[in-house]
Length: 135
Image 1 (cartoon, rainbow, N blue to C red):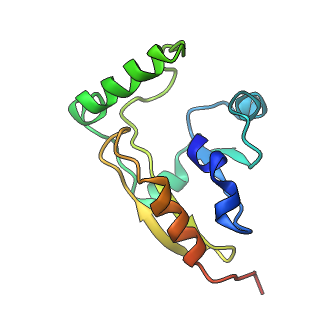
Image 2 (spheres, rainbow, N blue to C red):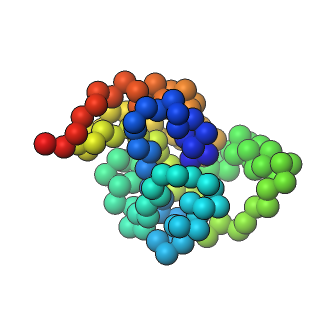
């Protein structure tokens, strides 16, 4: 989400939307403000979109891999305070590029939290989508 925020100017007129199941909808405004993101953040508490996209749950080994642990160590060294998880830590994430008509153009299903696509790949997928608008 932060990488998308930091590269918005490279995404043309695309509107990034982040969907999360981990946050109570009443807390989304504070979550957006905390991360300083200017785009919508929506809640999917029932994980309907996750199921639709085929996003599964990872094994403990996948989710708490050496790469994930290294990512958290890096964040702590930067001064970040980690909080106890309030959600299902085994729920895997996904990154998708969906056009304005709802057509899926690209889907990444990472095997763990430290295997997200490079932001350059996301930008390339976004800018390759032809401008379309609902009829």
